[in-house]
Image (cartoon, rainbow, N blue to C red; front, side, top):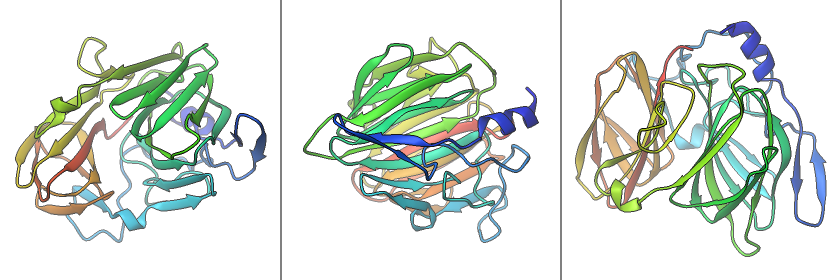
Amino acid sequence: MDRIDFLKKGFLGTAFIAATGKASRLLTNNNDELHQLEIIGLNHIPNPTSNIMANSILHKAETRGHANHGWLNSHHSFSFASYYNPDRMHFGVLRVLNDDTVSPGMGFGAHPHDNMEIISIPLEGDLEHKDSMGTVSVIKHGDIQVMSAGTGIQHSEYNKNADKDVKFLQIWVMPNAKNVTPRYDQITLNLNDRHNKLQQILSPNPNDAGVWIHQNAWFHLGKFDKDIKTEYNLKDKKNGVYAFILHGSATINDQGLKTRDGLGIWSVDKLNITSNEPGTEILLMEVPMML
């Protein structure tokens, strides 16, 4: 892959539509796309304010980028739209981790993507999806949605309900194959399969558990009782892992983490994880550190 061409083309900002079923309006703050990036290496850029180990990076919840547009309240773990931090551009090929809350009946109108693997993980409520491939679907807690944007796709996302918020994570991973045929997939997982253990929700293999993407990446979700200990062994020792605490608190490789904290670790074979309170939920994203 031509890294310079990929970065120049894949991260140009465009506007997006916020709409209800009755009306829409064009927003000019480029919230749903990325500012053009400097040409940078694709390994993680360490944060100079971090005081933890040389092979890890800590992102406390309160240090994330934040944009509240009224109908959309979004926290950005990495630079996105109006939030720009040169020390937080990506973690390896993990480019976007947005923690979004969308008001009832509102959402993102049709907007384009290309050459990106886009994963949505609903946390609360119902998110309605439509795309240029003719897909119309609703995803809810327990579902995992993936799109390979490839040569180009347009999609929209709305809060299907008129009486409650929808909350979801949207994650972008840079692919290892360019200009693939766009595709959509969605599955419903058994939530009991992540009680006190890590449930695989994504991999590079279409025949493996969860959805799959065009990248040597594995995602897992776990929900743990207090004091439960578990290990995560990396699938590929050249990869790193970005851990995101959805709820509760945990200690990972001796680093304490609370709700919505993120911890990136590389150059390790495994993670040692301890849940520090009941109902702790953890998302692990193992990704290559170089494209």
